[in-house]
Image 1 (cartoon, rainbow, N blue to C red):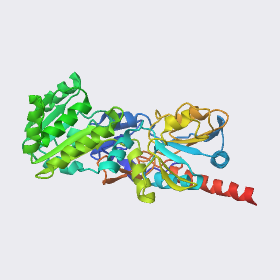
Image 2: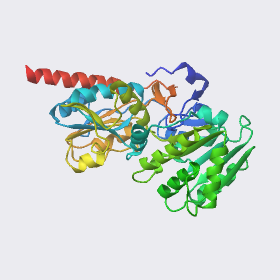
Image 3: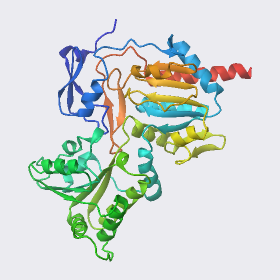
Image 4: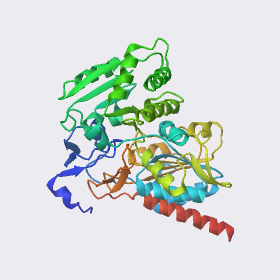
Length: 430
């Protein structure tokens, strides 16, 4: 019988949401017949809680679609990895402990590791590698930013609570100006609603051509370079940026077009120019579903970000070649280990490769085929504790569980899997 946690007895638990890149930690959850958000507003939290029952799961591991014991599923997964010449670890939806265990297994098997975010995370990583950058924390934005410029739309999806977390409308900063550069009609309408908050003024500026051209032109205007027939609206935006005490340019990496790292670099150039005489920063919101956390962990353990491997030549980093769709299309990998602890909708790409699936119990049908092994694992912040990095980088937040899970944690499963790989290799070498 599962023993309830002491905090459960009141039925209302203070909670940090793991389903949002902002890791909102001002929420409370009611644990009853279901998991319900009782205090705080966050659509990502509501949607995430709806994917889990209010009691621990009784899901079983599977091999080839048939229920089995955990040891049998681990043995089948270990056999897949030992037989693989080049494994790919994808999805990567986990927390710090899971990421550390993933790194150890990746080093032992020479696996390539790439998150399930369609390259959004790597846009920011590549720009940082090439040019560096100036960033801010949510606390700095909340207490200092008097000008916030949103690039090509207001934050949405798992960053929809950005303005609440940034204190827009609070008296900490008496007067803020929020600007929208580009965006849709819906973004403009949402921006107007922000103008109803205390001390907040708003303004929308249309793009001048595409996003690349607009940001390049804005960069030239901020640097006071000669621009023939420069649009008045962009010139006014450049002047506002130069006059602000603390300007922050905000964007979502997942919404950037192909080659979006060039836009990130141009924004970095704008921020660098402004920082010669004032304070400015960029805030790129992304890395959800654990991707940002895994990248932080891999970077501190190896010195290299994701899309790297410990191969025959040592540590290798290939931000373009080690892209999941490209690897699968080129037949460059021969097995796939997919991790999605938080999201049952984060499915692995369609492939006939031997598949190891570790994650939410709802993912089980995707591995129910010959050559497939599935192990359900506990979700940090739901059935187990954990830690995640927030989207603003250096802020690591703890996750408390809502109940004590019957499912194993990912780090435990990966530790068993590593032992299984080592045992099979030792047996074959004997």
